[in-house]
Length: 340
Image (cartoon, rainbow, N blue to C red):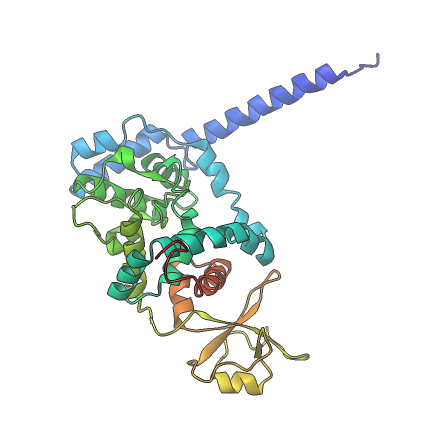
């Protein structure tokens, strides 16, 4: 007997398949790779936290109603940055509309940026570029509960050691009264606030800009920006240098073969490297390292500040795009358009 399938049968089958996959995803979030239940994992984590000096009251408040988030695991397995070409990545994080918005924000808040920049020795255009790239100028601070997201990743097993340490840092921040757990929203990976800091970064580089003893990198842009400046300053940022230069190379020049080589500007110029406008590299530049950005990206010669941005985020895509963004903002007006 021949079975005939109608469109209705297909729809019913697809709905059933989706339900099975959803159940499977939820199940994978409730049982770790080692077969340990989330409740058992949480009991062990609480015991470790209490041995570390975290109070039971803090742990009760932080983990009230917390359950693994299956969406976090899905996002962890499919990070878009690893699938994009550099031009796609660049266009995603620095479209012209965002560059215009960042230019306006930098002009509107020029006094704040200049004060923070002078205090920490970091050029305002780099701070504004990081602010734009990390949170779209504060409009995308994360919509996941930070404790639950970090607990999910710490329990999952793929990078449990890293995220367990980050979760413990969150417990310390809460226990010391710097922040309330319900205020801590994050990305799916636990990065928080307008500069998307991980908890360990907050521990080391948070700057209490308004000196009120409370961590507010979500709703206080000055505190988030000052913390970013403090971070870069402590890494050794050089206020007198930029990040690097995008260059063109002559025919026959083996850029990949020379990747990582360090030379003076005069030496690179003698090898035929030029700025995008065709001119030789500035003579006053320090010795620079050749970087070739894969997947359709540019060739650059970079300085130490580029390495500091790489410490912020180890992605070459990210560091070069931030530098390019900062270059666009370097010519931002000193005052808003309507300033007297």
